[in-house]
Amino acid sequence: MGKLLVVGGLIIAGIGMLVMLGVPVGRLPGDITVRRGNFTFYFPLVTSIIASILLTLLLALLRR
Image (cartoon, rainbow, N blue to C red; front, side, top):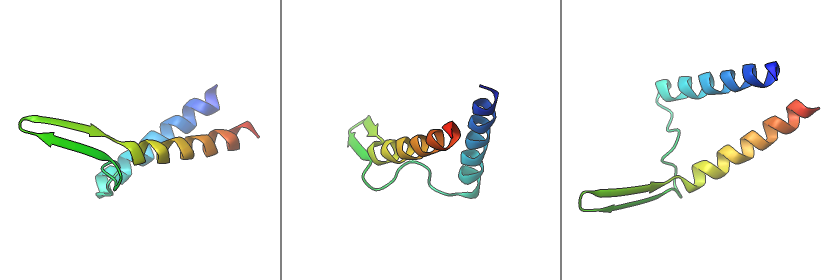
């Protein structure tokens, strides 16, 4: 459990560094945005798929 918490913290810190450097994390092509008047709906479809794949690979590597 300790390793998982450390790795999770490092991942969050890494994403934070990418955001600080200006890398667009989120708002990728394929994400759905609907704007109508004063209403905005944002569904991060592609971002969710990429995050799922990366987490699956990371957890598979940690199990070994």
